[in-house]
Length: 397
Image (cartoon, rainbow, N blue to C red; front, side):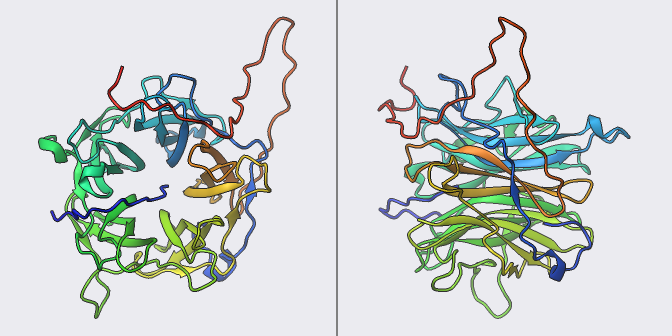
C-alpha cells in the first residue's frame, strides 16, 4: 500500500425515496425536521462520548419475524471524549428512530494503540449485516497524524457489538483502503467516510477523498469481491480514478465540498445518495441528494439541493448541518439523521437530529407527562455552546 508522507497538516471536516418511483417524481423537497430535535446528545460527564456525538450510521434491522415490533433501528455512532481526546465508535438502539438507548458497554470498537494507523481516532462507520455469511461487517475511517491522512479500516462481528479488526498483525490492523499516495489524485492525501453496500455478491464503496489541485473533499467509488481488497473505479477513457460526485460549479451551494455519502438501493436497482456539501469557505453547509442508474458510477444531483440546511441563528443546528445517514423504511418512507451544532466553533459540541423524508408520516413529540408528587424528571442536557477543552494528552491518568 502506498502512503503519502508529506510535511502537511491536513484539516478535514468529517464529518431516497420509495422504491420504484421515477426520478421526475422524486424531486420534491418535502423534508421536515422532527420538532423534538436534537434526539441524541453527548454523554454524561466522564463518559467516553461526553463531548460529541456525530458521524452516525443507522440501519433498520429486521429480526425476520411477522411482528414489526420485533424490529429496531441500530445506530453506530462516533463519540468524542472531553477529557482524553479519544474518538471511538459506540452503539445505540431504538424502536422509533427518535428515542435511543446507548449500549451499556460502549464504545464497541476503539482506536488503536500508539504507533497504529488509527491511534488518534476511528469514526464514520458504515455497517451491514451479511446474510450470506451471517456476519456483521463494518468499514470505518481512522487517523493518526504520523500516517499523514485518513484511511479506511474493516472489522467483523457476530452480534454487531463485539468487533474484531481485520488482520490484527502489526500497526496496520484493520487497514484495507488508503489514499492513492499521488499528489495529483483527488484522493491522494486522505480517504474517509465510507459507505458500503453489498449488491449481487460484490461490495461497493463510496467514500470521500482529499487531494489534488482542489483543496476540498469529493466522493469516489471503489469495488471489491471480499470487502477487503478494493479497486478504484476509473472512468472509461481516463487514466486515473476521478470523483464520481464532484463539487458544484462556481457559486453553487456545494462548490467547496461534497463528502459523507449515504446510499440507498431501490427495488428497481437504482441508487440514491445523500451527501454533505458546503460553499468555499464552509460558512454555508447542507445536505443534498443525487441519483444513479448505473450502479453508482455516475450521479445526477437533485435540482432542489440543498434539501436540508441549518435553522435560524441561535438554534441547536444553526451550523454544520452535516453527515447524513438515511434509511428506507419497510413502508417506503425515508428517515434521515444528521449532526449539527449551534455555532461555528470546533469547541462547540455536535448533537444529532432527525428529518422525515419524502412520504414519511410526521411524528410529533409527546406532551410532557404529569409526574407523581416527589418524582423529578431527568433534565435535558443543556448546550454549553462553547467549551474550553483541558490540555490532557491521550494515555494520561
